[in-house]
Amino acid sequence: MHQVSNIFFDFDGVIKESVEVKTFAFIELFQSFKNDVLVKIKKHHLKNSGMSRYEKIPIYLDWAGEKNTDSQIEKYAENFSLLVKEKVISSNWVDGVESFLKRKKNDQLFFILTATPQDEIEDILDAINIRHLFDEVIGSPTKKSNAIKFLLSEYSLTASNSLMIGDSRVDYEAALYNSVPFILRRTSINKNLQNSLNCQMINNFLYE
Image 1 (spheres, rainbow, N blue to C red):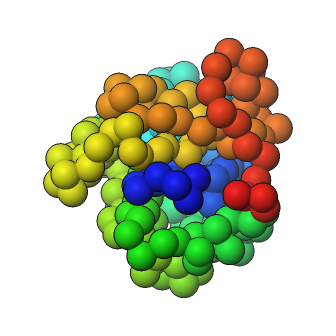
Image 2 (cartoon, helix red, strand yellow):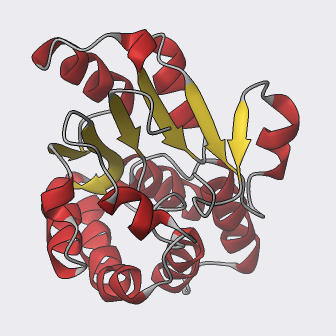
Image 3 (cartoon, rainbow, N blue to C red):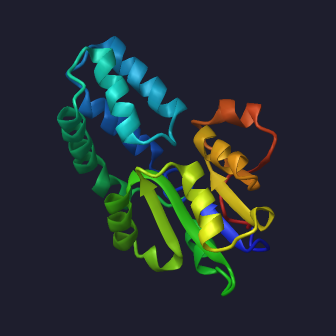
């Protein structure tokens, strides 16, 4: 991974072990809903970990028969942020990733692409003191496929000399859309994806 010039990183599940944090937050957020709806929410969230909360919340409100207005979506999104922000900051690092990031070569470019809202991910990166290691950070509402396309153009990057590291199908499809090689970070949650993809995979960054 240190041989390529540009690396695009997902955040949850790649840099921090924070996917489960958000799973529990969604359950807490919608705890007043019926149990069968909560089961559907959990399954959907885990299957679509790279999807923005602004895409998920309207789906979950529909399932519960709740009002699906812009103000209602924003209210739930704000409450979700309050539930997860500090928990993400305090969650465990993916093994070896801190050292990997700090060994960045001078001529390498590192980027974060995440479904987390822009302001929130910037606050999180500042809190864990790694914001300075990334040349650019792009969060929601920008889709990851569009973010990669923009960065390739903005920095005059070559797709074949770049790399996307993610843990979800959204990450894989964003890389594929832009002809960028992809590495899947294996987790206990994405086993079905591990079985369906033909790409390089890693458990952590300890030996990279």
